[in-house]
Amino acid sequence: MTRAHNEKEPPAHPLVDLDSVSRVYRQGRVEVRALTDVTLQIWPQEFVAVMGPSGSGKSTLMNLIGCLDRPTCGRYLLDGENVASLGDSRLCAIRNRKIGFVFQSFNLLPRMNAMKNVNLPLVYSRGPLRPRDACRRSLEMVGLGHRLRHTPSEMSGGEQQRVAIARALVNDPPIIFADEPTGNLDTRTSQEIISILQRLNDAGKTIVMVTHEQEIAHSAKRVLRFRDGRLESDEQVSERTMHDWAGSQAGGGA
Ligand SMILES: Nc1ncnc2c1ncn2[C@@H]1O[C@H](COP(=O)(O)OP(=O)(O)OP(=O)(O)O)[C@@H](O)[C@H]1O
Ligand SMILES: [Mg+2]
View 1 (cartoon, rainbow, N blue to C red):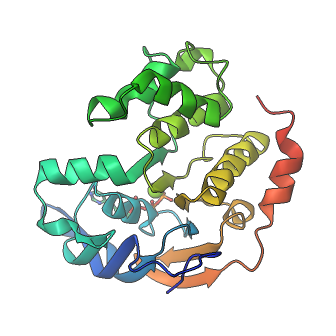
View 2: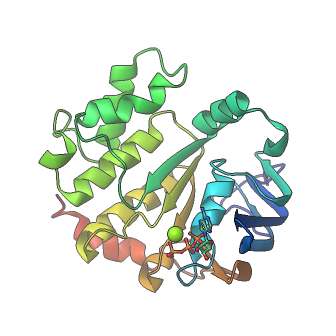
């Protein structure tokens, strides 16, 4: 169990609270145990890296804690609420308010420009009164104030991922889940994305990020390692090593 840093008073409950959660996929008569008996808590303002070999259950975990999927057994409380008991529309509303998602493949709509892509979560929620301002602010936060009308094919990979981060931020959710957000990016662009996530974490967002790279994991405050669907280790990172490195490189970005 880990509590957030720099907090005057510890928060009353974790944002993510998994108790003996398992997920079994069934394909005909074949069962795949993707996650087995996972118990863990994630507290507000943590920055957690999720690591483990391919097939160890990282994306399955992200889908569960991001409410895109439900556990086969076990209990999940999201910000104190038992999400298993919620109907689809209530679940969708909670997901929209509390969670922003960033995927390895960006998942932007190709025909829409940056503003319109970032606006998408607002279409599904009663978002801010001035959605255009919110979209512009969100894009400015990731350094893309000069690319508002560009479509994905008119942007670099790093810029596309920054649009995806802006989209995840536009509803101002407390949690950002990122499944291999730098998996399709070169080292330098990965550094830029990580330093954006670190800035968001410094500003109070809780970040949970899957990565295969040790160096990137060390930009987090805590590292969870999975193997064969089980939580193998849960360690605090003594020092965030990437911040200075990323900061020193960020000047020349995009
Ligand atoms: N929809 C599905 N149906 C059946 N099996 C699945 C399904 N999704 C995942 N699996 C299986 O569950 C296990 C965990 O998959 P998961 O995608 O969580 O792994 P991962 O750690 O994210 O791997 P990677 O690093 O390759 O992304 C794997 O054995 C995978 O084949
Ligand atoms: Mg995966």
